[in-house]
Length: 375
Ligand code: NAP
Image 1 (cartoon, rainbow, N blue to C red):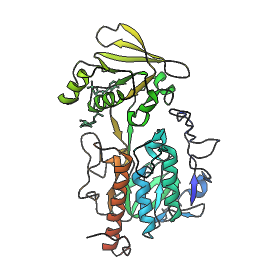
Image 2 (image 1 turned 120 degrees about the vertical axis):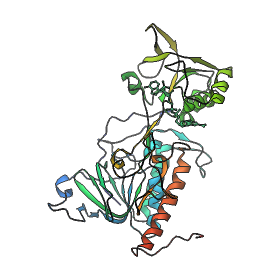
Image 3 (image 1 turned 180 degrees about the vertical axis):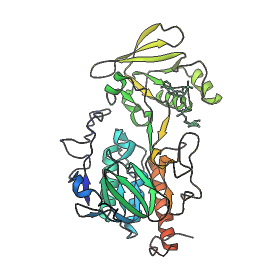
Image 4 (image 1 turned 135 degrees about the vertical axis):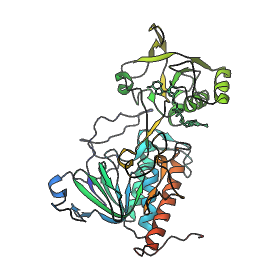
């Protein structure tokens, strides 16, 4: 059911750990396998005057349920909406699949007792959504108009029209954005301790950050690592006192304050860090095998901010259940959740949003309801 796919990014990191290879694209095909494609902008562009329906390679871009985002939240919403005969369209992003595409083994998603690779899990989500008729467009949304039904979104010159829309664009981990860190992502540099900690059994590693995430990840990583260096750029922490105390009290954690990562050392994999003292600029190197960046996340909400309320960090604020303050616009997953941030909680949100959207369409006389709920 995929009609238009052309992930443009070729710069995605290769496998995080353990030889996992993620292919986003250019020559090797999509991570979802067998995706035909696209990219015929001429055919895809809406006509002057703005049609409500663009036909792109035969795929209608007008739908009862338009879903933006293709992580666990967006794809679960698609499965539910598709099974309710709502023929959803997913604008999946140019690097579809969300954060799990940058993850190696997932061991805490129910139903996979042996664990499953993150990209494989997302491939299954997507196949399940496609099986029931979901249409996918692997494009990045550049603009939306949520002023009223039908709602509109634009991506690479194509206009998408939805009677209802589910926003599930997730959040992205923040990075230090130094060259060596980016080069070694997937080769010992990670932003997810729960995903990748396992690969550092009996190794010495470091965590960067001074918030609850960094403390939590440092403590979690002591299950595997022989030693964890916690590196923070100031001497004051944002983390809660209990987490600070636990971190300082842990025999495997060494806390370094007033240090910045000047360079991640290593050619093919992480071998050490060059650290700079934030006060006097003096430098030292330490040998480590892994570096975990835990300096926060950024919700992918830029294109929605003119339309919807966000909290101080840019996360969308649901109004009631998954409904936003705009009737017909629903919110699911990490785009509104900086607390749990789990694949399973995002998937649950996606199901809730699809059911809420279905009920709303029914109340507007656009669709009959199909999903049985207790209310
Ligand atoms: P956060 O509280 O915003 O902390 C981010 C940390 O990263 C800060 O210490 C910050 O340093 C540092 N940082 C930011 N950019 C940096 C850079 N470029 N280089 C070096 N360091 C940098 O983020 P978070 O820890 O992810 O927590 C987010 C929210 O989730 C918080 O409300 C937190 O309480 C919550 N949370 C709760 C739990 C829990 O309760 N178990 C667990 C995780 C998260 P500065 O302090 O110098 O700015």
